[in-house]
Image (tube, rainbow, N blue to C red):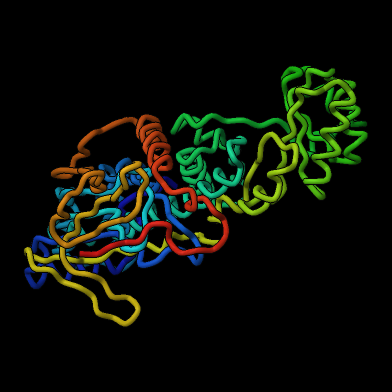
Amino acid sequence: MPTAPALLTDRYELTMVAAALADGTADRDCVFEVFARRLPHGRRYGVVAGTGRLLEQLPAFRFGDGELAALREQGLTDARLLDWLADFRFSGDVDGYAEGELFFPGSPVLTVRAPFAEGVLLETLVLSVLNHDSAIASAAARMVAAACERPCIEMGSRRTHEEAAVAAARAAHLVGFVASSNLEAGRRYRVPTTGTSAHAFTLLHDDEAAAFRAQVDTLGVGTTLLVDTYDVAKGIATAVEVAGPGLGAIRLDSGDLPTLAAAARRQLDELGAERTRIIVTSDLDEFAISGLMAAPVDGYGVGTSLVTGSGAPTAGMVYKLVERDGVPVAKRSEGKNSTGGRKSAVRRHDADGTAVAEVVTSGRVEPRDGDRQLLVPLVRGGEAVAPSSPAEALAAAAEHHRRVREAMPAEAWALSRGEPVLETVTQ
């Protein structure tokens, strides 16, 4: 059954709209902000991801006959509410951090200005997209940093929900993963795709040589052969015997990877396959990748840890009302307080162009030399400011992320637990 974007919504959004329509507050001019109160424990930064996906879904966030019928079936029968939903089209404005930007505690990564009923209705969709994609991108960025320019490949589709797999492949590519195993990510976002064979293909054949020969005959000698189904040393010898010294790569998917990689490199070199690359997989995360830094590894395939945020499956973002009819409003709950008023934010840099602080204020930040405005217009009057194809939006986000990384202090990429690399200064 096709997913209806408008029904990817918590029911309490609709009960609030119904009550606001009844008491006359639905049209109050409101500002909602998305921010994270804190980063996952020990993380030094987060990466904004999912903005492009959110803008893709906004035009389809409508309540047609099918959606309204589904609401009635679930007991939502308020006539005033259903009539309002039938005519709903988001008409507000959205500003936000450019996709690929880094964020820190208190960063106003998205700002929605709209009548209350329209703004509150978007809460669940906004948070589900941004929290998931930003968590994946943040973890993937740590893996890219740990890989020290060796390529990383996303291969987590079998470890998560089918649509989450596509979103994860997109988020990983945004921060530097060179390819994905997910074909739909290739179709929808033009993420380069790659893949060769699993152990099942080797087990299908009478012996390893037959399996390797079939793969080489189909894909050419530049393919990657999986050599650890039985015995790694024998697998490498057979692989080079079948493909010759021009074999593209071998893949190691189990065992003590640093030791196996070193032994594999020696053996390949002895067999004349000096240019055959070594790709490793097997439950890698950023720490395992870092631990392989000294090993003769040429690339990494990452699955489970990537699509689960490497221990932080959500970015912890919240969606809070901060202004009503021009009046700042704020939540005062212990441990969950917010700051009233619409925010401005700049990234402050030193004379060398290195980022030194995140400055967030209710009102306008007094600019200094080297300041970069972080909030950019995304939607005006319900329409995207700069419409682009999904693939173009992803390419632009990836390029923005690359530029942002270059301005970060070196300690940002440390994997050890620490405080956010930039202090959030509130004014």
